[in-house]
Amino acid sequence: EVQLVESGGGLVQPGGSLRLSCAASGFTFSHYWMTWVRQAPGKGLEWVANIRQDENEKYYVDSVKGRFTISRDNAKNSLHLQMNSLRVEDTAVYYCARDSQAYRYFEYWGRGTLVTVSS
Amino acid sequence: DIQMTQSPSTLSTSVGDRVTITCRASQSISSWLAWYQQKEGKAPKLLIYKASSLESGVPPRFSGSGSGTEFTLSISSLQPDDFATYYCQQYNRSPLTFGGGTKVEIK
Image (cartoon, rainbow over all chains, first blue to last red; front, top):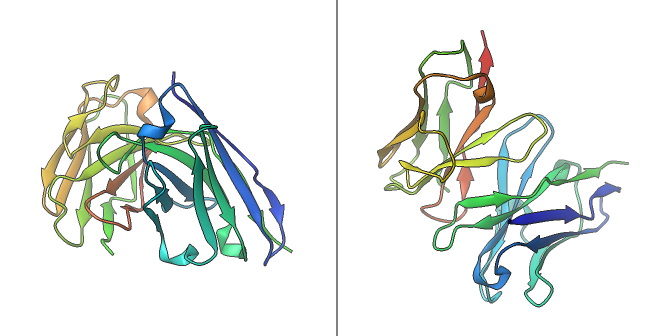
């Protein structure tokens, strides 16, 4: 059974940093693109970043470029999102998602971890 | 960036009704479109990919159609478990983008 479990969320002040993690199990992690999607309170879904199997391709939504870094550890079946210079508007539930084998839609999702940026 | 526009934003309907949700892309995305269902406080769930392919385990009352810029998600006979918010997502090109969502609520 595919499982994705996010961790690392919490309350942080504007300008601060957080590192999110996603522990993957139930599939061969190194074979799939992985993605972070976020959802601000009461709002819709927003794609944040994704990463190729070998880390040689990484993409970001414009609003987080230069502030967030996606990475993965295939040996530990884990995905990460380093978030720096956090803003109030980054407040959201952050979901880890596994892409399909060949295309950039999301077959499996974690339950999410809440990031709150507030003073 | 490709903008995805869903309509309506809210749909008040009843069990047994046929429901149709529309998703429009700001430029052609061929058939590179997925649909998700999200219940309150839960993660999204994949329903449809490549515009009309039903994900394994999804009931056949769900169907998708369209190509280019116009797409629809239909539910043939709404069940109590179907009251949720539905999102479309294009994966034709990065940045990947979602529609704003359609909330299907009880009339």
